[in-house]
Length: 308
Image (tube, rainbow, N blue to C red; front, side, top):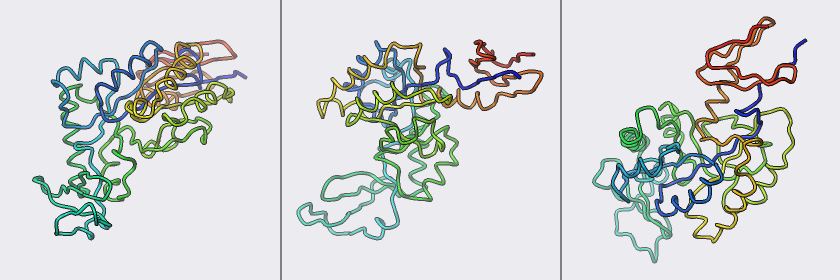
């Protein structure tokens, strides 16, 4: 009986490596790229709109070679019913504020929320999805129709069920929240792509990278994503940690597949679509797949089959 193993990324490796970086901070993203690019590490930048740091055409050049995801217009929050009930009409006083004060902006159903700590914009579920859609349209105009396939919650997953339901119906390939998973899932690919998150950020990058490097081969596809802001490495003086990460895990195509978030999920879907019978193995997808039959390496080309 033939031994067929389909759990390989390109290059017959088990482990994938990516990053998911929020906000589109041009100076800090540029510095971040100076570390990851020479190491061959690829990933996804999550952009909020409107984009104002440089001419729009320059964004396309700047992020060439990387995947772009939707990070919502205005970096908005999803307004909760609780916050709406707490709206106060008097002027906001940061010295005495003990709850959120909210005021309508020039855009219907979009509120400017003030707390003692900070100010942000928040929309009703319908308005929030409108902000998502406006961001999507601008990014697609810049980077190409169908190229923006992922969504990343600004400031973490929003606790608004109606907004979440609307967002899931939008058709994104994945929806990312915030928070490090470290190795709690055995570095498995996300079981639910509507609530996935990254494995490490600036606070724990070095130890988690070591764990991933040493993680034993259990025959399953593995996933490591670094998040969450390029500016974190500057703010907290952690560029040396990023250098350690790149030195340790970069430039090792014999061990890791470097890809964007979307590419990794595409590949996982293609692996799941493989059809195996006693007579043949069929790849019905447009992606070349890497498999082993009785320990021997084979490339199962896109839309092809291997007949026994």
